[in-house]
Amino acid sequence: MKDKILRCFVFGTLLLAVVLFSGFVSAVAGAPTSINVTFNSTALYDEGHFTINWTSGGGNTSSNYTIYIYMNDVHVNTSYQGNTSNLGYTFSNTTQANYTFTVEAVNYTAVGTNATSNVSMYIDTTSPGMTIALPAAAGWKGGSLTLHANSTDALSNVTSSTIAYGFSNDTGNFSITTPGTCAWAGVTATGYNCSLTFTTSGLADGNYTLWFNSTDAVGNLGYADVAIGVDNTAPTVSVSKSTSATSSVTVDYSCTDAGSGVATCALSSSSGTFSGNKVSGLTCGTSYDITITSTDGLASSGSSTVSMSTSGCSNNAGGSSGTTTVPTVRSDYSFDKIVPGVASVVRNFATDVGVKEININVNSEAENVKVNVIKYGEKPSSVSTAKTGKVYQYLQIETENLESKLDKATVQFRAEKSWASNNGLTKDVVGVFRFNEGTNAWDELPATTSGEDDSYYYYTVDLISFSYFAISEKAVLESGGDDTTEDGSPDLGDEGGSSLTWLWILIGVLVVVAVGFGANKMRN
Image (cartoon, rainbow, N blue to C red; front, side, top):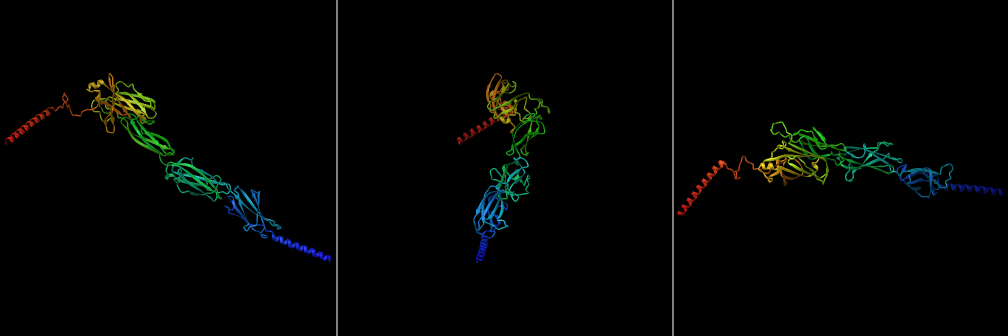
């Protein structure tokens, strides 16, 4: 009986163990399956905010799960996830690394199977590296412009991305086009991935910024820009003033360029030698084409041509054709420098020259200034019209490296008293005249009589430029002959006297007729 009871106890115990074991097995969960990542940027890369999801492996679906987190294969965290219907875990971390997530069912004891499932995701928070290259250094450009852009990303890369570009000036109110895209030609370690060509001819001259954007696979943005200037306009050349002498011409000119700046600005001529703004070694009385050429920083060139003539050659006293005479007297003076606010004086002329003194004032510093005073024995041949009346002296005043910087010149002219006396002139009827090339006439200048000495009358004139001058009597009555008597009354001559006699006879006849007519009327 005892054996039977013992056997029943052992059997019952085993049966109970089997039942308990079977219940326990049915209570635990199976290994998670179908583990995956959602809300991620790509299958392998994300910016750091996503969810780990899985499916229950069977068994007790109410079981908890443990999530083991590894960063670059180093365990950094363990998280416990309670039973939910989603079977998921939300992850948020922007530390850049390669993350592995191991999901394990709690109390999983199945023999010969793995209780865990793994998934990995790379977090990329680094923007792509951007570079821009120009065919030449950044600066002023013109015509067609080609630029290259390169973008690299060591993590998620940019193989499926594009470069966005824009081109606008520094005020932001102009674009060559709306921001466009440039597809990849293939990613290389050192080469350029995108090439863009712009035609700048439609752009106004000015400063511009070309910018590039690039995004990697998870949306990180890379940026780079380069500043350039657009200059499609050639330099402007202008001629402000010019003067001429018998063997040279002097041109005051300037070159300007608002963009890349003026690189060269120089004059040239088919003849002569050049020094600064003067062409020397020319022939008197000859016309020359003087060309001023300028280039800017981009080698665009502009030019201006002005036709100038040297002063004419003076005929000799005999008037024979083809021969010239050297001016009677020539006085040349030089100044190394003339500065504003300080008058520079030229004096000590030869006694037979009709200039005593010249005071020169400048509006800006002038260097290597030359002043030449030439006395002519007769009308210079380059002057088309002779001065009427009695002329004491023809003069020419010419300068070098002064014209555009001259503010005012005060010149004291002089005329010999003996010449005035011999020609029946007083100092008040003598004046200073300047030849007007526009009207071919001699214009009287507002001269001030500034005294006299034993030999000369002096006349002071203010000038702003120099030319040909004449010291002469002021006014002359133009007539075909001597038209005054000795007392200054009009000389009518024999014909005029005869005409006057007949006039008196006619007047007498008319008086007699009138008296007779009046007497007859009274009798009636």
